[in-house]
Length: 212
Image 1: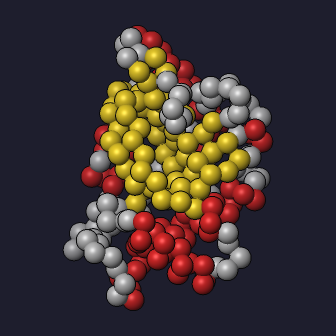
Image 2: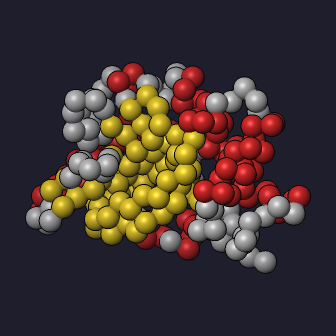
């Protein structure tokens, strides 16, 4: 049976061009962990990664012991994503340079069959394997992003302002306003593993919420 690859099935969401485009992002299901600090050095961020991947693969591999949930289908675990913000400012990905001040929601999309019960079962399983991991910080959430301008950023994370400026220019030229309000954030989707990929070859979807 062919596995569903969300990156290929939903190219409009995961494979935008290297120039800005407008998209309307529908509701999706995520496992998410909230935290703060520099992702390069924060123990909190490292723990979040362990939770997100641990829970996601626990659900994916439930078929191995016959405990797969109703509606289960074969799929590839979607990429890591992050919503980024900072206290006291409308964070646009450029106007806070001290990474220790970052706040984030790290998350991985889940298949449509993942319910609260499926999530809780996975949390119980992972807790037995990793009792030192505080899985109470993980949550299942539905997120509807709505109207956004997005771009495929190619290069290092520190070079993202180049692509963000293109988003801003596109929005202005098309009568749109960036709208970081009501749970809408600077959003990044990581299509490359920085541990295995040279900085200049990294591919990251950058998405900014907008209003007409």
